Length: 106
Ligand code: SF4
Ligand code: SF4
Image (cartoon, rainbow, N blue to C red; front, side, top):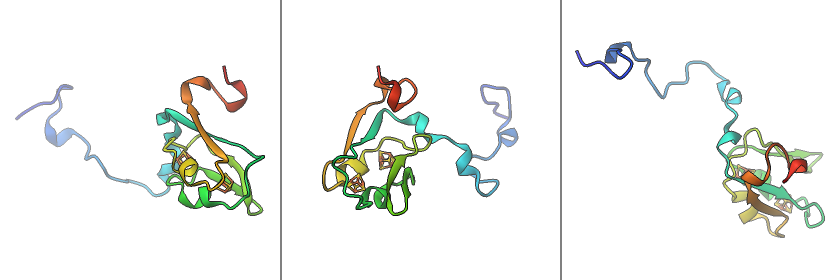
């Protein structure tokens, strides 16, 4: 029987690509993958919430119908929100310039 690099037989390796319990996606902070960070420009924002509707990761947070913030725990930095914003109220910046948070930009 063929063994993998860890010395396990194929039949001993857990099956991949299986969601083994519901609601587990919140456990995976996919924002760690990000190499670009969306930055909100409140002076330009007209609160149309198009960014909220197009974000594939539900990482745009609204409050009372207006833009509130990005949830950087899950934002993967795809840039769709910035691309679709009709008034250029979102700019994408290099993630490496932000060691921890927006306020701590180098
Ligand atoms: S799409 Fe642009 S203008 Fe509309 S809520 Fe988002 S940031 Fe504001
Ligand atoms: S960059 Fe992509 S993942 Fe992040 S908030 Fe914008 S649309 Fe969502």
